[in-house]
Length: 576
Image (cartoon, rainbow, N blue to C red; front, top):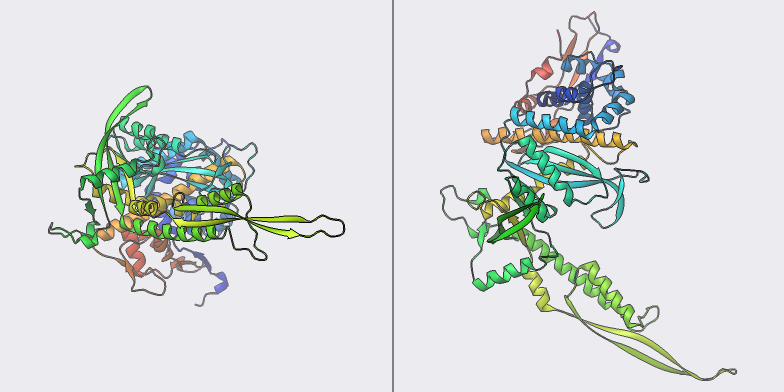
């Protein structure tokens, strides 16, 4: 019997079961329901179910707007009801409902309860036994009004401009890149004071001493390091250029040269021979040496003293990058300096006053960061011209003054800067037998994992900016919600990479147009994209079969296995 196609209904399945299965295994719904107490008149799905299915929409549609969610649920109501086992209604996902969830999640006490329980569950369910955490912060630029605002404040951006922004402080498990603790702070707050609270809350979740806390140079503040030591943990961070130790790197390099000691070569693990023999020196990615010193600081009225290792490390790739940048800056600065005093010709403005010339030189040196790299010799040239009297005006002498600047490169200063290229100071209190110089360098090299979380928050999938909500509590709740999505993506990366590494295999058929291309480290985004095109065809009631699934391929089964999910997430959608 032929079926009237007008009676068929099609719901797009795509990656919805994969996302839902991961969220279900993470326990998002039950954790949120334990933390949020809905209004007494709340009806329908609980806040935990609303947030869970909203996260499915955000990750599947790559859209965090509230307005389209209700319509999306209406087009996927059968799939969502079968996956969740709940009576799903589109009205449960109205703007008002979603806004109330954001408002409740924005409360710091509520959010901290959610992330603590979630962190404990993820560590238990996925056996995440790592003892290394990373701390870092990012900003989001918005166009909201700053008047009477507590979150959206005028702050200094990385390019030096001032913009309305908010800050996100994050502690993540390394090397997973899994967010563990998230704080949303005002955009005008300094980064340094945010590290200690983030560390202390992460320590509460991990429950134990002996952590290795890795961070950027803003984490190297003495009080932050002392607090980590007082907590029974270790730190690793590059030292910022501090006023009390402005020439520390230079002095350590000079002392090392005077001693004539050899630097230890640093290699990637895969470049070291398995038989334990010495690796090829040409494969080294850097070199370094270390010295020790004693540090003292006051933490909550108590004097803390500890031994600190200073790791002086040169990255060869960083050195090449710095040298190329230095040469470009020198060339641009030299051209700009010479252009300050052009030869006399029509249309060329001349600098007449010494103070103006010195100010222009200083501005160029600051712009190109070449202070001390040039020597200058300048003099004033005066050209006199006699003008005869005319129509009662007396004869006079006109003087034209110009400054002539001679620019020479300070080769000794440039050579000193070239020698320092690629070198950087790192500080740690971890014992060398637990963290060698090479291990420390490679550990910090993994900082890209933490930064990958921020790329995801700012990227297409989560797109934390622009923010279309106006109320600050809604915005704060939405940012927290998107970090839950970041956890899903980071967890997918980790599970797939670990499973493939254990099998010594690669995942293929996830690149459009090149089915044979494979990778040992597939991203969650690419794996989810491979599910696009799967549909659920729902037949009219009088037909023998109620629904059927289309386009499920072997690669889909493979991805589900890597993520620890069952194919029943898809096949249970179709019914006989």
